[in-house]
Image (cartoon, rainbow, N blue to C red):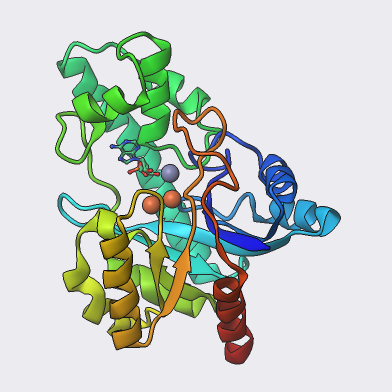
Length: 274
Ligand code: AMP
Ligand code: ZN
Ligand code: FE
Ligand code: FE
């Protein structure tokens, strides 16, 4: 049996419902999954109920967007208490920032002669936690770009002309927020963020793990992050970052998994803390 600790549902920028994720996980023979939607807890109850019915363990999680110039620094939180007021309030602010950001992105696209309305993006988003993937899907749908990838490279990448920054939540603040909500903070896809220099500061804030296993990482990168985790006494996690069947990505749920022992260690850490 295996695990996947990084999944997105249609409550953020995935295209599958929480129930559909659990169904696919059960078919793929996964024992444990974590739902880690961007900046929202809205899918967690439904995922938990579906997991109970299907015999799949669903760890309540989230992926917090933090703001760093020209870098995507994301903090995963596992076993968070969804009722925590501080976390809920910050998430509401971040999501409000996401909605305002869609309007700014659309404004930048208009200046680039790409005519698209905020409503078209919001309609694809489930209204909850809209992001660039929803803009990308709207651009594909309108025929402005050939595919999802081109939407990012031409317009939406951190270095592309229609990029707009997020609400300003510093990474260390995100780590503290997860801890305050009783969760285990993990640095998501560090090789994507390319900000390993932040790790000591994040550990000081309460970071407990590194996402060492991630699609597309080279063997030497995995070795490097395994060493870092050992050196700093951090947990090792991993996941597929699956975004759904219609997300514009190739990867299927169950194609990128990690050994159960890693999920066991995460759970042990949670049980020790409580
Ligand atoms: P946002 O939360 O709006 O900043 O969008 C971030 C999401 O966009 C993440 O889930 C990424 O997986 C996705 N993303 C970021 N860069 C790219 C890219 N170059 N190609 C495809 N997806 C991307
Ligand atoms: Zn995403
Ligand atoms: Fe991420
Ligand atoms: Fe993700």
